[in-house]
Amino acid sequence: MQQSIENIWKEGFLKEDALIAPKLNNLFDQKSIHVVDTFKRRFRINIILVAIGSLAIGGGFALAGVPVLATCMCLMLAMIAFIGRKELDKLEDLELGVSSYEYLQAFNTWLKDMISLFGTVYRFWYPCFILIFGLAMFVANTDNGWYDLMNRDSLAVMLPMGLLAVVMSLFSKQVFEWDLKTIYGGLITKLEELLADFEELQA
Image (cartoon, rainbow, N blue to C red; front, side):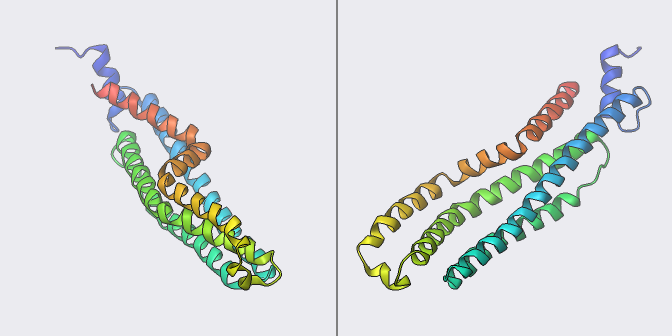
């Protein structure tokens, strides 16, 4: 029996070696590659900015007279850049294999795993960074440095910072996902639309 028009279009979309609709296959290939490549580029830039930020913040607080805390903040930001670099390496290993659909599925799996990883990391990273940052600000702006932590005035600064650290620990995943959507929201939406199109054609 002759194939229906709907099945012919499905073959053209979903089979890499189909000759029925090569232009459609090429279009979906280009869209898939564009989404992933754009994400890679933004992710790489973000890693570079974090690395630069670690040096800038660390150097700034070192000059302010709190070298130990400056080193801690520098290392914490460097850790985020390092984890990001490792995740980017995994993303670079993805190849456009049998079909664009499988390529997007692999990318979507990587994206979910990356979000889960950073969500766990930030649960501890956010509160630690906030406390160290607050401590560095307090010590750098007092006359007696670390000795002033023994004064009651320090509670007025450190108590709110401690409460903020607890809140950030509780809502770290939501904060990270909001941050992710701010930077990559449009790309994630395009990814979801492309996957939905492929899945609709497979139905």
